[in-house]
Image (cartoon, rainbow, N blue to C red):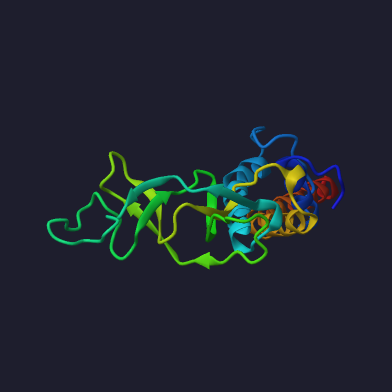
Length: 204
């Protein structure tokens, strides 16, 4: 993929070239049919592709931010479970990263660095309705720890060439049915009009 690929418009135009669409866009906001269709599907297609594979450029590692913790000695009367604690059997409830598209792993914070064999732990994703506002959270049994996830990488300059290639192909597949059918119909209409003009001139 050429180094000139640096914007969503570049990716979209590559997709348009590959499906044989004759027009190009200068901006996703320009209002042309191709731009409007691409703007509708671009972000969704990009994020779907990011989730589909553990792309190295999109990996993020962040320390956990704890929200809730189970009682240190467990639920022994008079302490009983309530919504103030993580759902059983989880010990910790931690924040879900705001830019995360997919959680890849939850790991213990290494005591010795480097840790050449970091071990992932089980985790679950939940929506906590007991907070002041509904919030997506991660449930796990390790804290402090590290959340490894796929981030919402939006800058084409940060992407691997394989990802750029795959995104252009995915956009092309989604744009082709609408754009190429329309373009075929328009071409047929123009041919029909030209034929009618020729026929009229011949009769004259």
